Image 1 (cartoon, rainbow, N blue to C red):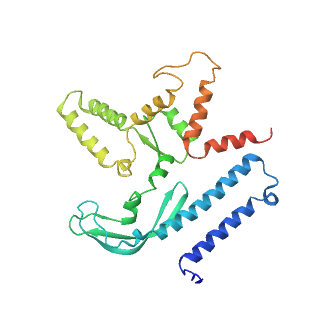
Image 2: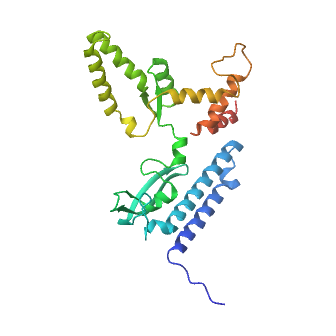
Image 3: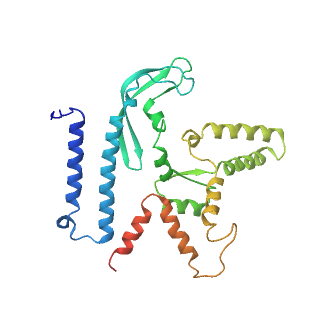
Length: 270
């Protein structure tokens, strides 16, 4: 029987992965976790699983032949993508954490499209985090600027960017134009159009791909609560448990660890 020759590329990766699995397994032993309760154990096991999953993902990307960019067809015009860089390094934020990998990057001389073949094949956005991570990260809070809403945002999402709703900002510009030049005058209309254009051109949130209107959030709230009440309806009886159920649903769907933190705290001795 012919002896298998070790692969100089994959074998070190495999050995490192097995060493990681062994390390995580030992961290979960009784000797290492004897002082932890069930909730803390579950969190540790989940974190171990994430580290192992991240290692598998990194290995998967390194093993993907599309990262080399050989004989790639432009996805826009079906021309040939001319590779400019063979080993461009990129780090992307995913639900597994930050993943760093190397891939080719090229440009199509026919239509001018540029991109990384591996990113396009896997549906990885050209900028920012991966699509799945975008769904779970609270980038911004869009609201009309009311003080109590800003305070609530700072309490619940202190790291999120506050975005003033576009329609409300434009309405304030309209009110300013009327106060300055008189309602219905040509000067008021001209000034309003100029300032609104300036506001739009300087809107960094548009460039970041973030929403600039609170309508999406308001509509989401209505859909979120439909299981418990109708649209624009409110409970007039206390202690029904409805508000508590909505709170638990919000914790579960937040996707930023609030659900786990809530139950870890509940599991603490009182």
